[in-house]
Length: 174
Image (cartoon, rainbow, N blue to C red; front, side, top):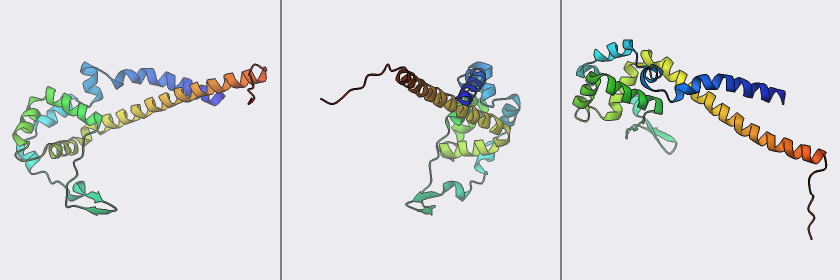
């Protein structure tokens, strides 16, 4: 029981500092989603040819039909919540990427291809931010699970205390 208390208190001491980052606003939000000056400068260097000439690997387009992999149909991979918010912030902050997207999609690339290329190009710039977001989400999930289990433990402790003191009522079938 002592371990649970220590774990719960540790999670509470960690979580409040990071929970503010789970739904940040403004400049803090841009930092959480990896929108840094370095990234902006890098993204501004992209051209139409950066995207048109980017080699899309066949392995990205493999799907599974039953148990067998096939490349006959392409997978439409959706963005994670973090990637989606990153993309929205980037589009609003850097007009050049918004213009490139407008020129390329859907004439030259599908929307999901555009974003797949984008995230491969900027991987070295945003990976640490995305990993941090995944870690924070995991911590928050663990804290919620811990709170739920502590609520269940409290109910069991009350029942055990009542049983110890003879407070419970036993019902007999009639």
